[in-house]
Image 1 (cartoon, one colour):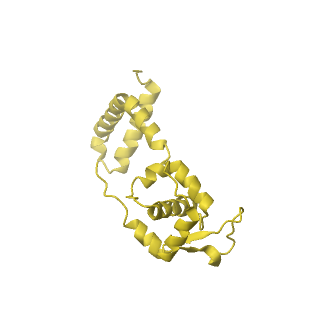
Image 2 (image 1 turned 90 degrees about the vertical axis):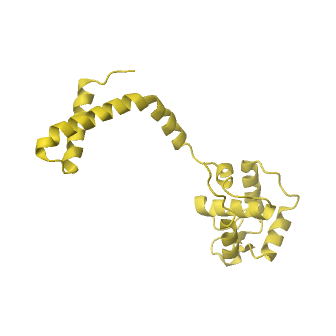
Image 3 (image 1 turned 180 degrees about the vertical axis):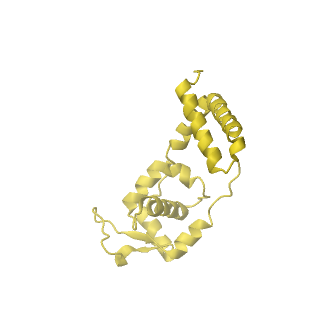
Length: 167
């Protein structure tokens, strides 16, 4: 491990001193508290340097759709269609989806695709989980496919699929 330079130590002490002032430490205790804070900061930085690098790398990785969907109990194609649509709505601000959008999300999650995606949408619409997106302005499919949007009932049902976090 590298030893901190005199400049790094001075900078750490000055920051610790400012933190102590901001915290309202009495002037007669300021030097002692600042020294203690700086020492802890320097020792903590040395001890966690490698751990911090690993942790910060892991924390900076984006959560994939498959990881996000894993927080839900998805047993049917209806539920997977809801997951894909909610993800696109909440993470990408996509108001309406097509079978093509759903296919891409299935591929990202590596789920087996249903034989007839349009039929799943039609049956989900009968359950009032989805509706045709005719009422949304400026929404049309470049591929000429029917556009579908989530209903409030569909969104509410999807929220019930959230798994309890167990760590």
